[in-house]
Amino acid sequence: MMMLKSSPAKTGRNDPCPCGSGLKYKKCCLNKASETSGMEYMKKKYLKKFGIHLNDKKAIEGIRVAGRLVIETLDLVEKMIAPGITTDEINTVVHSFAVEHDAIPAPLNYKGFPKSVCTSVNDVICHGIPDDRILVDGDIINVDVTHIYKGFYADASKTYFVGTPGENAKKIVDVSATCLKKAMSMLEPAKTIGDIGWAIQQYAQGRGCSVVREFVGHGVGKEFHEPPQVPHYGKKGAGIPLVPGMVFTVEPMINLGRAELFIEKDGWTAVTADHCLSAQFEQTFLITEHGYESLTPYEL
Ligand code: MF3
Ligand code: CO
Ligand code: CO
Image (cartoon, rainbow, N blue to C red; front, side, top):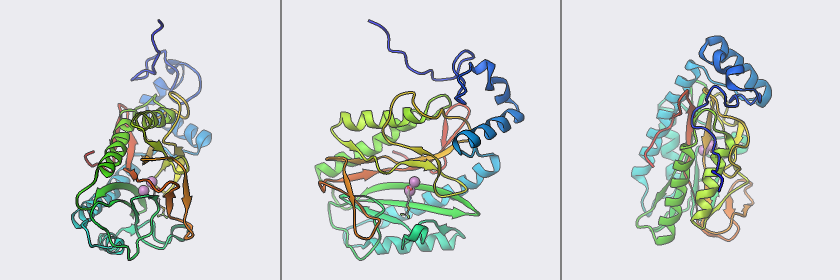
């Protein structure tokens, strides 16, 4: 039988150029890529073709610092998660931490969102609004933190167990964390946006779970949501090629049951149509010359 041809791990001289021109790498960006002027060339090209900002050193450092604050916030939240607390209490901690560190909690007033963080419990997929709901033993809760620091945004989330998890909770949290790991193995130049979604979809469906389609990862940095969109499903090798300087989130929302959802009357809260559990992990990633760096790093 024929060998399956997979996309190359690194771009060879004769491989298609990662900029998507259709030319061979050596005939296109190879020489330019090593020079500062080459970076400028690629920057213009990605902006014009896809609306994507390729970030320079200064912007990357700005997002990295914002990312550190996001991770410190999630660490603080992790310590307080227990049966008996309310999601409003999480909001207070996230808001206070941001303000005390000269950061702005990005969700607050974003397109009318009323709180400083998203808290999504059990069958809530994302965009849960903190309120007086009391967490109970066996719940799962995703806490999604985005801070703006000195004009730079970083975005990350984790799903936590409240007390002792049941079998379903353990499974969906494990599958969604592993989906993010699988996505990370695709983050390098010459892989594509489609490869990321493919890796996630493949794994999630292989474990009998489903991928939410209505919400996607996104470019992030100078704005909350920038191009490109990063679907958590897709075809191998399809879509925009990854190039150094791209910063975007990957944030697969994985459902234990069916993929369908509805939005509650508040206009935000996304809930699984079958009310089965949903879990999510999100980090902000920078594409580097040889792979990636998480700008909101945590162990998975
Ligand atoms: N942090 C979410 C994301 O990952 C966006 C939340 S928008 C809000 O993109 F308004 F709900 F906060
Ligand atoms: Co995001
Ligand atoms: Co987020």
